[in-house]
Image (cartoon, rainbow, N blue to C red; front, side):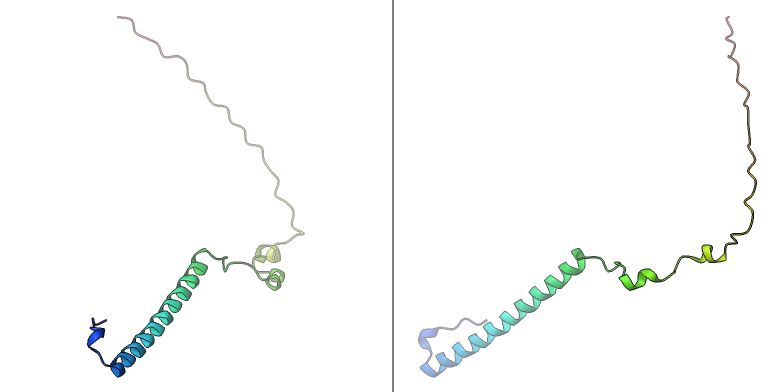
Length: 98
């Protein structure tokens, strides 16, 4: 923005100067609107709801049921063995008296 002495301008120059100022104001207002919209979109992206929500139609899909499909239900369960362990207790350490 240039500093202009308004007292030295003619009427036509003042009208032209004012119209240029008006157009600059409109341009700056449009920039502010764009920045506000960008800020709102950024805030929504940053703090908004997650995109990982599941669509109700996707819940019927069987994505992780591979083990259930491939398993053989008629097969016998393996027999469990009971494993026991007894540990040897350490005795007390003997103290040497000198």
